[in-house]
Length: 133
Image: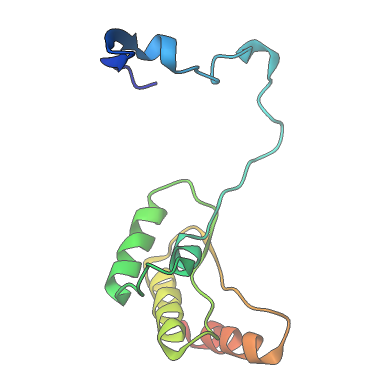
């Protein structure tokens, strides 16, 4: 837990605050009651897809996306969505380059792409899978 201390003004009076009184550490809350799960927890990352859905976000350069993938590879991530290739030629190209990079670098995470159950979504995904090597 990050520890801090500061002062804040409440009704024109300065009050000393420390992290112990302001932040509750749920990691220690009845920790002995909770056993470690007997199953593996898997983490799926959609940064490269869902990050583009905000109206204020612009399409990143392909090299930026590849750099993000390299960072993700250093984390305990089990799978990564690399795009929604039917949306545009640019996103298709980014997904293709990302798939090639995963194959070239032998990243350990599984790769997924987003698509609906219509041929116009599935065909670009199949095309990328066939071209990735």
